[in-house]
Length: 270
Image (cartoon, rainbow, N blue to C red; front, side, top):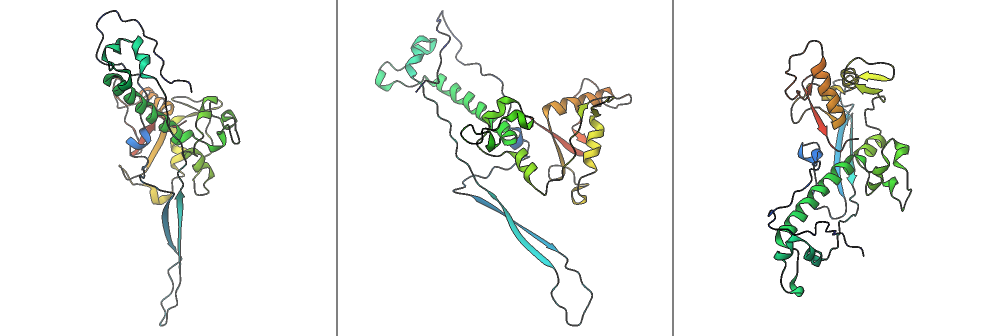
């Protein structure tokens, strides 16, 4: 099996810093910003029961009869298997400045502590990044050993073919008959719209009009939220700072709210 570890810096020319520089990556916004819950310890599958009561009122009667419906159903979470496995040879570091920190005996040789710590750190950062993207973009049909569906046929970049281990939120929302669907908008812009474009504030208002009454006028952490991508967030911020009449300093961060409801930008949203 090919090794995952590639040492490109093999020039040792004196003292070196005692740390590695890790590349910046996106974080798992969907969980960290309270937009999704992670359920641990599922052995096989996990059922979320639901209950609904309807049609229960009736005229007063001396001898009443039962009237109304109580429906109990549930949604099922079925975990799918995947794994992270990397092979490497600690001896590869013999050509690196970390060679001075290797165990002298080959039998006991492991990664130098500093190299191990930063390898784990960057691996976990990249893992969170992968899950943030997969949470929204993943589609089982992309599996190259299954349907091998081309992501571009679904309006996604070709690179999204790597996200095929489970169906993400986007697929689940499109498949659910209970999803309130807004007609696909034109290209969003911050200011004056032309043919084939829509002002982002108009797009928010168009979506807002479809919100069920039971969710209206509930604000804050447990209230209604607008989830948007980073690209849409940038357009929204531009809209706030380019209006003819505005009340925010153009050098400050925009207020992430629309009509009092929180707007949450999520890195993984397409």
